[in-house]
Length: 205
Length: 207
View 1 (tube, each protein chain N blue to C red):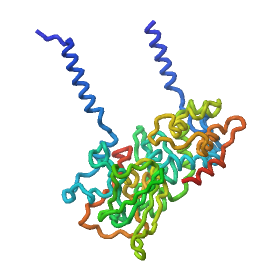
View 2 (view 1 turned 30 degrees about the vertical axis):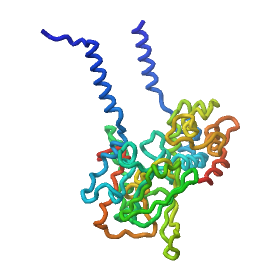
View 3 (view 1 turned 135 degrees about the vertical axis):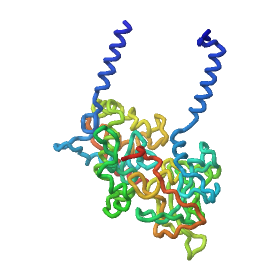
């Protein structure tokens, strides 16, 4: 009996370890994929800018040490610094020279710089992948099955319903809350991103 | 004759106590902060701990309840010359004004080695914070001229060098630079500035 239970547990673990973690555009994320396979980021951009402003400073989620990374012009910039070699070791990306060598970066104008160039599409994409990879199954339930968005860490943390080092970032019913919630629910029937709320809250520092 | 390895109650208690002491010793550390402190250079023998020491370093690594030095709310260093091709030098005589989320503000004047700080017992601000940089107005003594406003809020980090590290990079805007200034010759009156390495670098020894 015990052996059978252990075998079943083993099979269950093996099966669950093979589950694919959904990425952006694969169904767990409220972002469409264009016909060429790239993410349709235009609709996400206003939301991304709000997250960047509220959460993405270098001492919070604009930090590569965080599981949830927010990229953008106000903090962490995305550059392909790291790559993998044939054996899976992390190495310096061949494209990273311009970013690592400051003299070349200045000469080439390659360094995007905090407060410099506007947030790039590559940065919006990295942000959306971080958001959707955080709790993919719960995200799917929110995006397609009308589950409560505030149950996601993405919302419960800034609402301070869950322990959050950054404490409360916004309130329920605030413009920030409306903006991000509308994005999470934008794939539901009659769902639409509340761009007005996103743009309005960006006017606040 | 071999002695029995079976634990008696007294022996078990002793072992549990030893384990408890060991766990307390190990468990009280903060690996992130330990790594941050260990990554900083040794104290310059010519500049003992004081207002001029360790310019450019993350003050609150040590100036905190964890680090043991006098507890600061905020601390940092002002520089001239943060461009990638320049060598930053410290700047004194500039005022950093910080507003907290409750509307309170404090001014901090950078000293001869560019350092400024405020002790937690004097002000424990409510984050996030807004920072503004000022210089004296030569035409109106006692008045200040605003030079720049920090483009982002300070969400939680009290050390400027927690984010403002070395030259600009994708991970940092570089040291806190006073705009419109040019770097001067390095002075012997101050320790050499610390410009990294980035303590948040996740991968060491890249090929």
